Image (cartoon, rainbow, N blue to C red; front, side, top):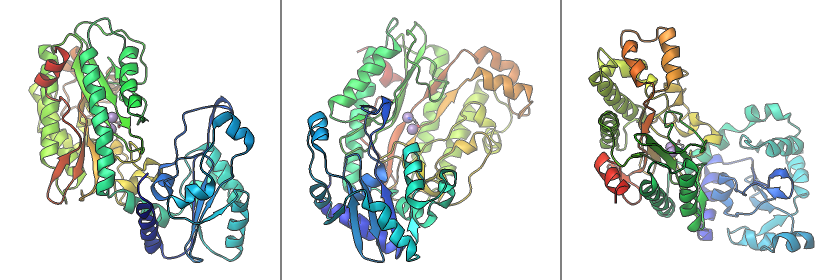
Length: 461
Ligand code: GLY
Ligand code: MN
Ligand code: MN
């Protein structure tokens, strides 16, 4: 945990922004995999962690701005809890560590909210993302679960986003720790790839690196010979000579800050000529994007710089014709790169995705619904303190190629007759994590081998 002053300061800033009303925070609870006592790995809600630090299940909190009260709600452990799960600090001790002196049993939360509602006090809550929270909020506030998202508080969402989007020096140190572990995960994989190794063996090895540091994964590992499938969690294949292997994996450190990196490596230790050409085009796009990072530049523009580079490269391969910048501008690039260039990262790997990309990545501005652009999660002008990923990729997705061809999409730009020969290529991505500084940008964490030469050198070491 950070020092209690950090949490006190964060709550003071939130109160100063919102000025009045009651703010309700629900901590996460244990969640049964197949019965109540056989639980998934516990993960505290990130906004709860940010303001209340407490990494325990079964807590909620209220900041009553009008009454100047900060209360943590929770129940003390029973002897059964202690016998089965071990002991914990008391609710008062947990609260004291973050500068809160008032605690109440969980059973009091509903009464507290009912009294506030009876007084006409606005109750601000965030959009719930777990089923049990939907039911709990519905029970607490008398709102139908289906209406909770629409009735969640936009001022509360915006105030939280406006704090969590700007990473402090102590948060950046935590993120760098997570990124350093993530780099170790990737180097581990580069040393392992060879024909005959199973995707599952590499997934297990990189998970071990993350867990050995005392933390965990920041998202389920993607370890695949089918890199063209963007979020592919199948690990059942055996690596074969000549294939590409894509690892998208990151660690979450003990403070729950995330790293998120992707590497693409040759199973045989050396890229084929065709793989190397596409790899280098993608690396050019990555470098062009990184060179454009600085405060004030909209990330949408950085995305377009990278997409233009990819379109130039596709033209060099004879897969695209016409003006590459125009092909990128109108969205034809999305055949090769259907996702966005990056996303905010912090306590969540896709930071605050639960609060809405429109607020986190678009500062409240509308988001495109067009295929490709709709998956750009970050578009707003960059500001000092933002932490995010840069992750261009080039993907050959046979089903998408066939669909676009049948629909005659962008036929002025895309050379469909040439694409049949590329349907077995797979996908390539490089992903690294960046901080915007006062006058530019800084890559976070230790260096990850990312050029073709560097990757081949580690694969063959
Ligand atoms: N790890 C998922 C992503 O890169 O967005
Ligand atoms: Mn990412
Ligand atoms: Mn990733």
